[in-house]
Length: 212
Image 1 (cartoon, rainbow, N blue to C red):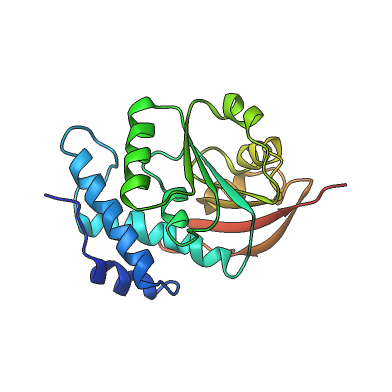
Image 2: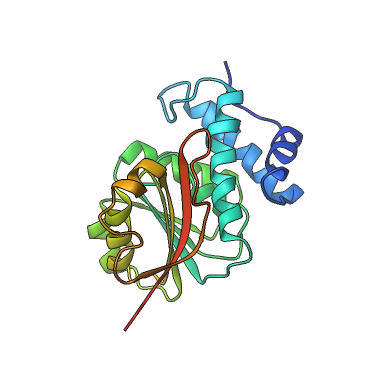
């Protein structure tokens, strides 16, 4: 079964979470087209139906977009971007903001480049390599760190600090937040969080780094 999803289906479903423009919906539909094409040869995502992709992939990333609200930032980095969730999908709604997608797997990095090109996102740069090797060559002001299931939330924020990010959008599970020794950890202040377990036990939180 193809993972391709139409523009109107995407727009209708995601508008329930956060406003979405026709242009962004078109870019996300293009993302599903590229994903469907690449998925014939290799498994890019675990979801096997367009319904699953819409509910667990697109909608999940759009909940992260809702968490950002009207927050502005100079650039963003998505570490362990994989299929582009959430970095590439967020970039679709911020076409003027530079996004850096970091992916250690060569084929996934190639997929991300092809998807970004097809979506018309010239502001997206894909880095093939490990985060610690890439970040030394990237120095961007007002940087937002985003990642989905990259690591334990405390480790994700340590990585965000290593990138010298001013803000971080954490997408994890409520269980992992509860396991944390201290949340938010030293050096971070919460700006927004759903602070509740939904049916999937998801937790999203936007934090600001406290710089002495």
